[in-house]
Amino acid sequence: MADTKQNKRIFSGIQPSGNLTLGNYLGALKNFPLLQNDYECYYCVVDLHTLTVRQDPEALRERSYSLIALYLAAGLDPEKNVLFLQSHVPQHAELSWILGCYTYMGELNRMTQFKDKSSRHADNINGGLYTYPVLMAADILLYQTDAVPIGQDQKQHLELARNIAERFNKIYGDTFVVPEPFIPKTGARVMSLQDPTKKMSKSDDNANNFVLITEDEASIMKKFKRAVTDSGSEIIFDEENKPGISNLINIYASIKGISREDVEKEFAAARYGDFKMAVGTAVCETLAPIKARYEELMKDKQYLESILRKNGEKARTVAGETLKDVYRKVGFIV
Ligand code: ATP
Ligand code: LTN
Image 1 (cartoon, rainbow, N blue to C red):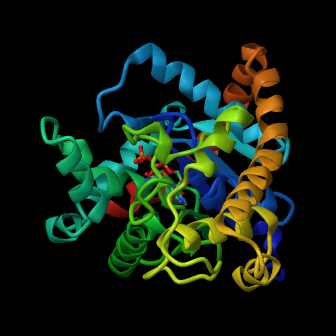
Image 2: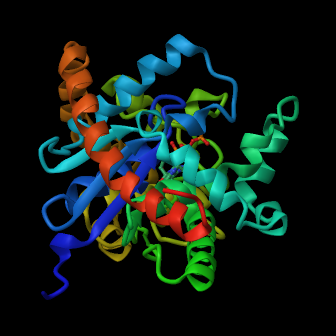
């Protein structure tokens, strides 16, 4: 049979480590529903990953429900996508152990997210933080994933997953599909509104640096009004000399689904102040219905719970098949 998109698989995950930002939305979440009609999609709430940083147990549980509600609110149809929790599928941790034995320290030492997070959490540089990319590789490889929608910052981790898959396949014969990254042209790296040389991040201490998906309109507008811009007055994309304006162009292009050049043309005669307000308004228009739907969904935990239970079952079946094949190949009695 021809290899149609229908039997191609997508996998992606987001950590329930905080409220999602506009960066998470444009870099990842916004692209998830675009794939649901053409691919078999697995979207996971990767709760195991969050323990690399200390979590409050009750808050973590609440944020996991919250993230599933956001997946749905962003437009993911629970009948068409497998929406599930990582901790409901034990095969993630099991495969992670095996893949760890096929990953070199040298490879893990090169991971920039590890270097970055260990400098930010110097009092808790734990083993999980170090081996985290191996768990991410297990997440992806368990589902024989063809493509992984992610933001730019995860590209290095995806490269590692590819290398591990290729290494394993070479030793034991074809076992894993080697996944491709799916990184959007605009919105793949949304920068902080106050310091546009660093990534917008949900764990930032300064709330003026980010906009949350569920933030109220007045607050979003205020943050865009205060967003740092650059010297000069032209609205042109130049990341090196105009990081602030370039970030805003990128956000607007991604929200509207247009190119950066189109944004430059649309605002050729505009002033910085007007442009900032236009970006803020476009962001609010897109996020408002998502926020409203999210708030509705959060009132019905039983519904969210039922989705998780049903889909956990499906995910375990698919993951179980891959793991069994791996166990057999490495020499375990299955
Ligand atoms: P933290 O700030 O706690 O490290 P994070 O937001 O970087 O978290 P995740 O929640 O795991 O990390 O990210 C989920 C997805 O959002 C990933 O695909 C990631 O690449 C993407 N993403 C995160 N930040 C941005 C950003 N600023 N711009 C674009 N995409 C982003
Ligand atoms: N490492 C990612 C989250 C993540 C992920 C995944 C993304 C964990 N497992 C599998 C895509 C596929 C992050 O920190 N943003």
